Amino acid sequence: SPVQLHFAARVAQSAVEDGTPVPRTANTGLLMGCEQSTGIGPSSHEAIPPSTTPGAPRNLSLAASVAAKGGIDKWNSEDEDLDSLLKMLSAMCSATTPEGALKEVKAVMSLGHNLWAYAYMRMLYAKNPEVYYAALLKKPSMLLPVVYTPTVGEACQKFGKLPAFRRGCYISIKDRGNVKKVIEEYAASELSKGPDGKYMCDCIVVSDGGRIVGLGDLAAWGMGIPVGEPFPPNDAPANREHGPY
Picture 1 (tube, rainbow, N blue to C red):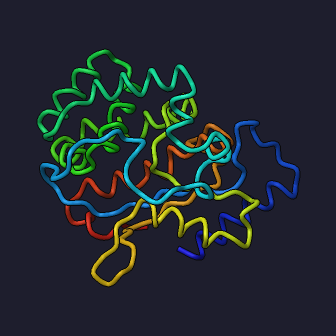
Picture 2: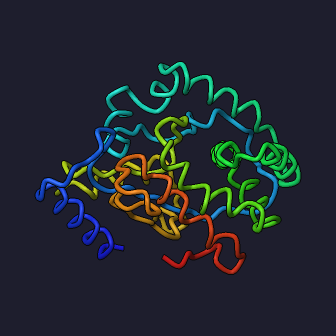
């Protein structure tokens, strides 16, 4: 909401003005995740490379370091580790049905380290959000601890070491006075429009990247929280159309 955005902006601004230390990985400002309703059931579109989902070009709403590289594709492809991880995760995640996704992620979880299962679910969301949500609805007790607490804590600590995906809007303190344009760019690229011509977005989660699940200021790596927060309320059908935020 505008109030949340204003409050979070003031927090971020105060941190900069007070000289609060910020990690060198930081994109000082706000991290935002926007949740859009999607139908439940098999996808009607073909799986495509997750970082190249069709949409308007993005520059303002990316993390500063990613934008400086020339975008998400270049950020992933020009780093040997990220490029390899992206290819491995894409090969692991081949499911086209909720049942197939549950079978794959269960196999990953059998290794006993849910960070890989978290990475698998991010890839699944990027490839096929309909199957992602359908799987979450079928086994929330198994998957919620994977896509959010407690696994999201480790995921945030290593967020910048995982492949970048399109989901998530970064707002820098340097965007003061220009926040609307940043959000409009993100919406034009990542959200669909309804019959009324307005972008369809059920809830927005905003964070300044500080005190992430008790881990301290993770700055830009704290994006795991805004893009993860919309997951839990959506595991209940009654909350699918309008999130509680």
